[in-house]
Length: 108
Image 1 (cartoon, rainbow, N blue to C red):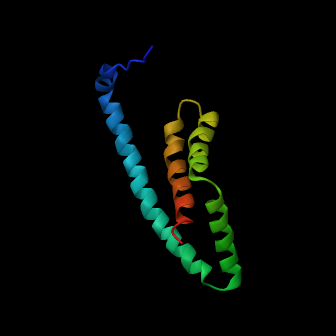
Image 2: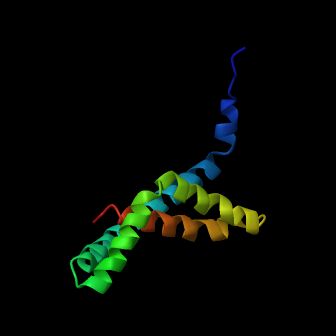
Image 3: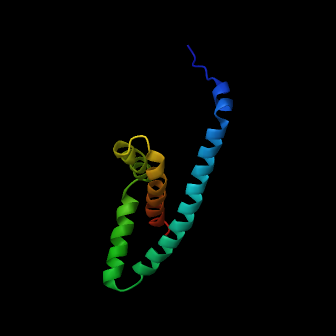
């Protein structure tokens, strides 16, 4: 038996879907801007003298070793375990931070 989808639900909740799309695009835009800036700073730190270059190398290798999907899933689901019912307040900055941290390691 084939599953059927009720397209009337999409039309019924179109405002919430548009708000979710706009929030996702906003997070992606700011994460892109922040990750390019942090990636530039990491590239400069990696070319500097040894104590700072070692820290930059550790940061880059750490975040390049962790898959992006794992980082994003932790940013989404871990706050939901601790803040019941108010995850949106905590989730948006954490997703932005995790996306920036993981993407900036690839900008180097």
